[in-house]
Amino acid sequence: MTIYLHSNHLSGPIPSTLGNLTHLQSLQLGDNHLSGPLPKNLCRGGQLANLTAFNNNLTGLIPPTLKTCKSLYRVRLEGNQLTGNISEAFGIYPNLNYIALSNNKFYGELSPNWGQCHNLTSLRISDNNISGKIPPELKHATQLHELDVSSNHLFGEIPKELGALTLMYKLFLSGNQLSGKIPPEIGVLSNLQYI
Image (cartoon, rainbow, N blue to C red; front, side):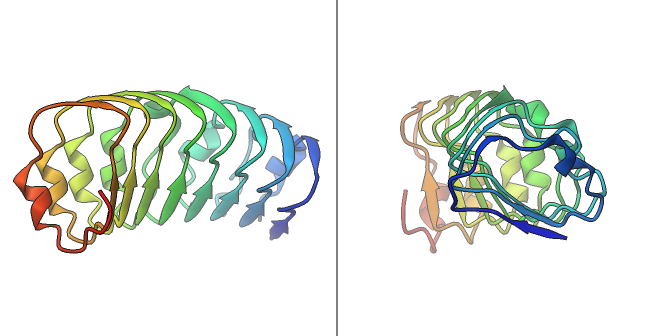
């Protein structure tokens, strides 16, 4: 089942009953004026692959059912006011290809679990309140083309392990509190176009 309601003038909360749709595979609500939380039971049926709710006024935490939603392929939640500890809100997704969480109010540290999302090509978490270090375990996400963790509160050194991400062409780390030397391993990323 697919629900396409993006790019309208919809307002108010997302009906919680949408979380009861056990055959829901794609829910696209981006570019509206929706508010309130995401439905608690999203991915109840274990089939949700595409979740798009960017550029709304959504608030609250990521539903626990999304943390264990192994079917997720593409997630776009950027441009909301979602909150919560990002290291606890998301899990390991074997099928995940793209996730955008930028321009929200997530805090906490980047989880090493992102490195276990082996099909992930784009991880975008800029403009949040994330602290801690960039996890070297990201090197295991070998399909990663784009990593954007800019405009957060990250500190420490840029992990040399990022040099193992040979497909990387966009690496955005600006607006943090990173220190130390730029690892020479970054210089061997032959596909890198933006840093």
